[in-house]
Image (cartoon, rainbow, N blue to C red):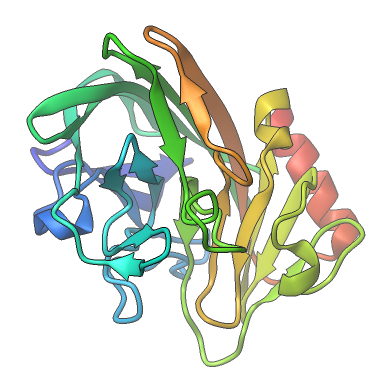
Length: 281
């Protein structure tokens, strides 16, 4: 069972991640449960929490910068014709309980609250599975239900006027190293070629580790990838890329991302094979 504030994910008894249930953070960082640290099977850390370049980047989790004007991402809010602006508009994700909690995964219920009002209710399902001696997979599904009596509009800095900044949804803040990580898909190389595109899988490779991300449902595969490598290492799946996403009262948005966490540097064929195995489990 988890402690009051965290639980440990394990693969075949080996710890590979800690899930922080109730992070103690200031309101402007949009407090939310997150995974950190996440490691490879060899013990190499592949996440960061509150790094100096972006204090509101919290390991692995779900964050949306604009839910009907409320910031569930943290930090400044991008305002059209004004740019990044400090606003008192931050929301928080509040853990309400686990429906299931095992060493290799959990099912969690959360409330997304802003200005004293619950906007969204989330069910989050996370599972860790082994893929061999050098890799494992993190299977992460989130379901967001509009619990208000009116439609909710989800946006991003891109939909609010900042080109190329369609972040919001699943997000993995990776480990920053001296060398910029490599980024590649089945047929593209480099941050510029991959960012904002749709691909069955996308890899981010550091000095001794590789993360391979895959959308595991049709809706998830339609979301373009948000990628950063040179400025900082991070990968996300964009809920609102060019247009805002409207969620009707009672409607549920579901996304599932499976991430292979590997030691070393798999080539394209190996990355694709690991993804196929991970999604099929």
